[in-house]
Amino acid sequence: MFNKNIETALNQQVNMELQAYYTYLAASAHFEELGLKGFAQWMHHHAEEEMTHAMKIYHFIHSRRGHVELFALNAPRQDWSSPQAVIEDALHHEQKVTASIDEIVKLARAEGDYATDSFMQWFVDEQVEEEEVVDDLLQKLSFIEDFKPGLYLLDRELAAEAVEVTPVEQ
Ligand code: FEO
Image 1 (cartoon, rainbow, N blue to C red):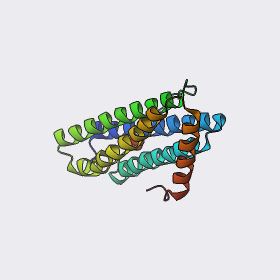
Image 2 (image 1 turned 60 degrees about the vertical axis):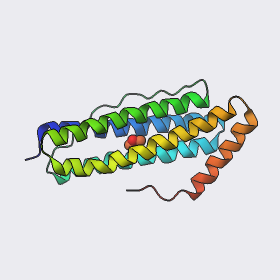
Image 3 (image 1 turned 180 degrees about the vertical axis):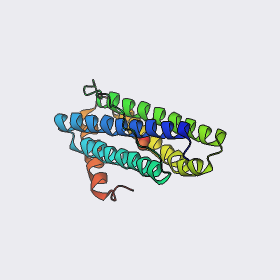
């Protein structure tokens, strides 16, 4: 029998990953409307990654004969004062996701659920990378500040990266 506390925590994590999907999708739409297509593609790629994270947990709950419960999503923020503000929001969301994943690992260990502990290690590692890539982008933007040609070049760099990006990991 799947532990109820773990099941609830995992369902909340599915919601959080879907909320992250929504956050990145809103950011992608925002950049698309600004004509920053490289940023828009970068955000869209990350939105798709979040969907795969949600589905990974969704399938895991089912594999343990648990019940998937889909909670309501909040409307994401859709208006920002600068590209930096968008990326700061994304980083803040990633930090919240990391904290939530750490809590699930703690809970799994406290409940003696080593299968969930092992499963969640993929997410622990993934969050290190997720926070790093968002923080790297924020750092690049901090060099540019309000220098428009710099923003244009970074947008081109992100567009080129998006072309090279391999399909989203399942
Ligand atoms: Fe799935 Fe970016 O956290």
